[in-house]
Image 1 (spheres, rainbow, N blue to C red):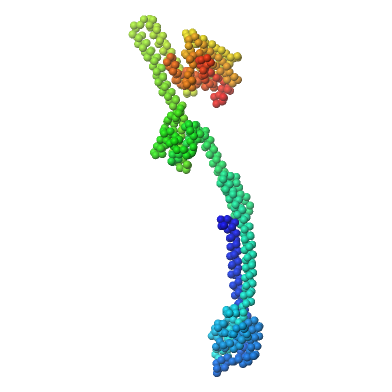
Image 2: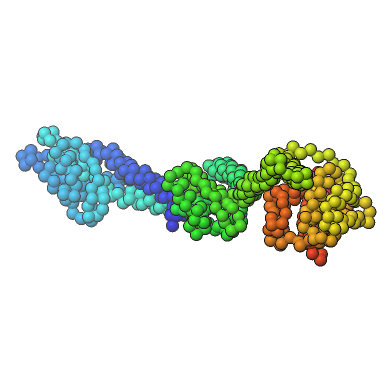
Length: 598
């Protein structure tokens, strides 16, 4: 019951009214009774001298017997009866021994024991008053001593006893009025207290509902202020708090969205790990890199490879940053674990990066060193051997010419290798300067094919240019385009069988122009198609039958992409391979392509 503000406020109001009524009763009823009794006693005291003087006229003191003597009983009785009627009480004349000598009448015989103030008055010789309780009720008693010239002390006393029934009735009437007023006040207080407390409880309930709404996530909840009292001030303060909470939650949500957006856009996987080795948070990139979803609560040992779990335990035990590179499926990944401060539900984070390209570049670097060393070593050894034989001077003119031809061939091979490496270095450093113009693709193709006529005639190859329906032009660097076509035609000449045909054709649409180089060779294995443009890559057949560093196609792709285009390879119809160079028609398309457009 007391859990409701309305109930305890109502009880409080009722209790206050009850306390106020009790105080009113204590302030009114006992003092009223005392005042009425004191008034009656004061009235009796005022008539005490008259009563004693009148009674003295009909009494005398007999010194021989030492007793009070009534001179005229009949007249004395009439006298005290009139006094009793006037005072609305009973008048009794006692001698000094406490014996009643005259009595105005009563329902019981007069006895000095009923009036203790009689003995006090006889002993003190003064008028004594008070309230006594007898079998007939409460009485206001006045004892007036009687004196005689022949006696040194009182010879008797006149006792006037007046019933206090009228006083009790008056007090009872006042009490009834007070009780009725109290009952009405309690009823009114219950109603008024209930209404007032209901109003207060209703206003507080609105604040409670608004607080529950905010706790439930509705930050738009507000409380009507209403009256400008304490509850109104509380409502205003609550609204101010709610507004600040909205601002704070909006800021928190904005920061959370920014962090989530940042985490979701990261290519690195970010995973939060609790102190007991469980996943608490992860971004989508982590699931992509690791190949499985990381639900909150997943154990470290089951969610991560052994290498990652091991470095996390090392970081937890030793502190500091730990990292490891491991192979996961067809990816090479790097995991780095970082300890974080307190205040979050995770004590460390693991950042997973895809370092496949870096690993591939590292392998390419090693392959480059090995291949470059091999490519340089072979012609250098050949040149050294030829020079040594020439230096001995024991060769015939025909043999000398043959060795000089071999030396010239090896020098050309070294020069081509050096030029390829120089071009690759320029592409990587961005120092390669392009001078794009409108270039006729068919014209460049014819010029390049003319360069390969000697090699083609040696293998009885047919080199043809098949232009499209109209002239195809592209926005590119003509010299670099010729270098690209030269690399593609050279590749086709190497692998085409004797007597086959190498075709260069052109095509295009509104935005891009295409140049296609097709051959009738053995084609490229499907598993090697994604690798042919990798640096230093040489196919299985190429390594067995031809020489070269494996840089030509890689440099060709880099050059085409620098000019805003794309280079691809696909199996040709009827066998062989088709390389497609796709270049932008104009400068605007080229810029859009380099900026990420299509």
